[in-house]
Amino acid sequence: MAVTCAQPTDVVKVRFQAHIRVIGTLPNITRNAIVNYNFPCHFVAAFGAGFCATVVASPVDVVKTRYMNSMPGQYKNALNCMLTMVVKEGPTAFYKGFMPSFLRLGSWNVVMFVSFEQLKRMMVLAQVAWESPF
Image 1 (tube, rainbow, N blue to C red):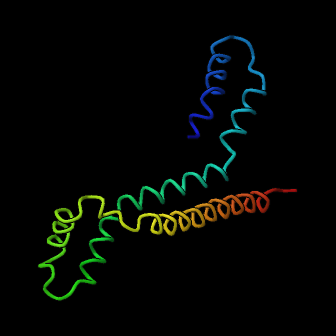
Image 2: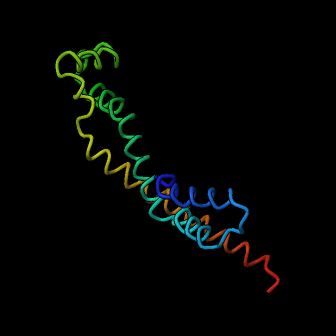
């Protein structure tokens, strides 16, 4: 997503560099403003990571939950539970409860990754201020 937003300014920068003239600061400032607009980028990336994690983990979680909550002898093993689900309910059975799982995992990712990136940014700024002679 960041590349899509920054691509036009990158093309301008490359075309300016192809000429012998000195590049003005405006294209560079524009590009850096887009690339360094971190909070929305981190938010969208974290939410996307939560979605991908839910898509991958949901089938395993559903089978695990069904198998663990089943009556003794209902399934031979977790693989039997999975096959029974596919035959009786179809592949969409693996995504029952997807939205609550996604909201939980997506929101957790947003809080964790955005907080991490903001703390990392503050630590870098603090280190620069600490090392600055002024």
